[in-house]
Image 1 (cartoon, rainbow, N blue to C red):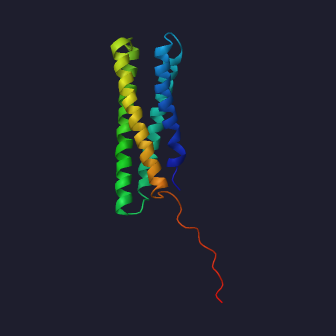
Image 2 (image 1 turned 180 degrees about the horizontal axis):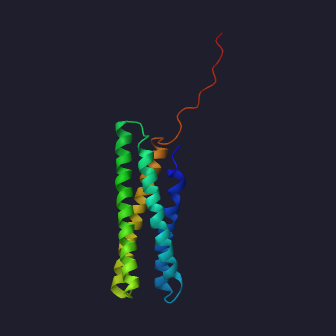
Image 3 (image 1 turned 90 degrees about the horizontal axis):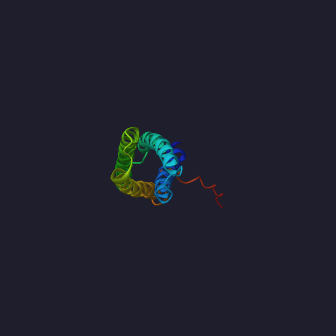
Amino acid sequence: MSVHPLIVHFPIALLLTSILADLLGLLRPGSVFKEIAFFLLILGAVGAIAAGVSGDRASETVAPLPALREAVEQHEDFGTGTIWLFLALLLARLYLVTKGRFVSIFRTTYLLISLIAGGLLMATGYSGGRLVYEYGAGVKSGMEQPSRPEK
């Protein structure tokens, strides 16, 4: 059994909530939202890496059906892009915060890129949901039907 479905929901929630906290921080300057967003970004990025590693392992068990393989590869591409984009945001934020430059244009640019990253994260989650609900990936196939006695 894959642990991917157990892990993946945490980084989704953490990263999207991080973006929301940053947006709330714009509305409430001087509030704690900016620090909360940063903390959630760190946790979400670590969780995204764990989700990516577990997803790679889970993809090895997927049946070699062409349609399913294509959908898995799309999900992997979205996931990889999401992880790299959020890691880049984390590193940029670490740098800007330590230099005291996470203000004005840098913060605005960061927020715009984080909204794009959030959209990519949602596309990744959607494609993962399609794998399960449309293709049945990771779902045990057909519980054995009780045999009916022959007459």
